[in-house]
Amino acid sequence: MATQPSDLDGVTEGCSECARETLHKVRVELRTESSKPENAEFSREPYRVSTCMECQTETTQRMNNA
Image (cartoon, rainbow, N blue to C red; front, side):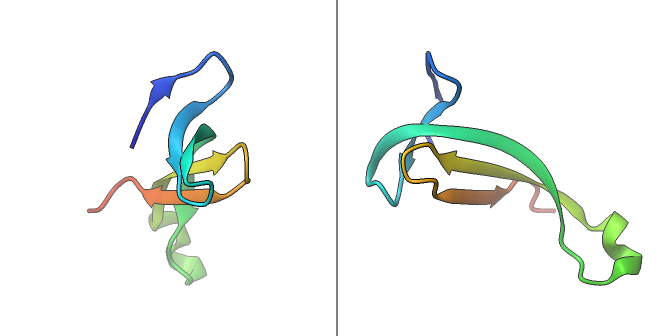
């Protein structure tokens, strides 16, 4: 996974849809993994979300595999 800084607001990474290196917006978000409402607050995990600025393809990766 490439993480070179760019002059624009984003990160240059390989895009599987575009089949080349493109500019991506990257963010980290907490996602709830439990479908049960009573456990939802204990099942949040951080995910890295990357969106290609060319084709808008979004890829996610779980950051914590505990």
